[in-house]
Length: 260
Image 1 (tube, rainbow, N blue to C red):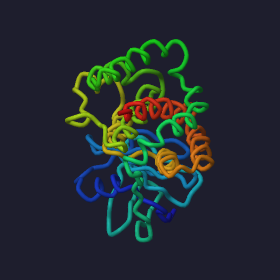
Image 2 (tube, helix red, strand yellow):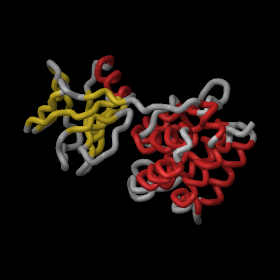
Image 3 (tube, rainbow, N blue to C red):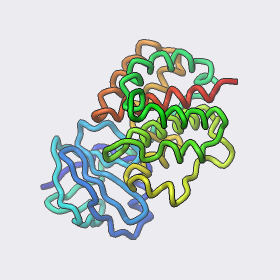
Image 4 (tube, rainbow, N blue to C red):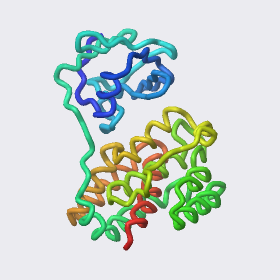
């Protein structure tokens, strides 16, 4: 089956250019096929999935691949199982970030807009509320290492609620120019609490890159466009079962670090 890539995230593009591979399918769903070269992760996603830094979005509503199948990059195409994916007309996608000063000035409005979505986060209720509160305590002390130890891997799923929240927190702090000295690192023991896929999203977030609705929230909010910001928050809330809400929970915490 021949497919056209519609967009390719800048991180995915760089990974495909620089990795010798092999890229192997590690998880497959109707709307996304995740592949890893052993250290990095990319995903082939269906067109209804919002763009993201590690995504190659294709012109199909459904996807299928077997675990262990190998992706071959050849002559501007990605060859995977039944698919031949042309990259020739793919738009390279990179999430835009607002001016930090404008983001800081509008942080209260953005946090208010995120509130209804963040309230649906798995971290807002038992059994995850207590460890999430502990993590926020470490955030107040500007200790990202301990915060990460509290929250990484917290909750079930491909991307646990704690990881999604951490990603939202990191991308907001990075966008405001307030990611602490040394950026964000995770020690190997803590990293083993979660999946390579989830870590890929968190690492992108620390570099200021997340899925498109996150950037839409930040850009609209920093521009003072309250209606557009609320609409982007609502769109974020539709991501996954609770992933969007968990990201929103973390974004509110991250925006809180921009005070002063």
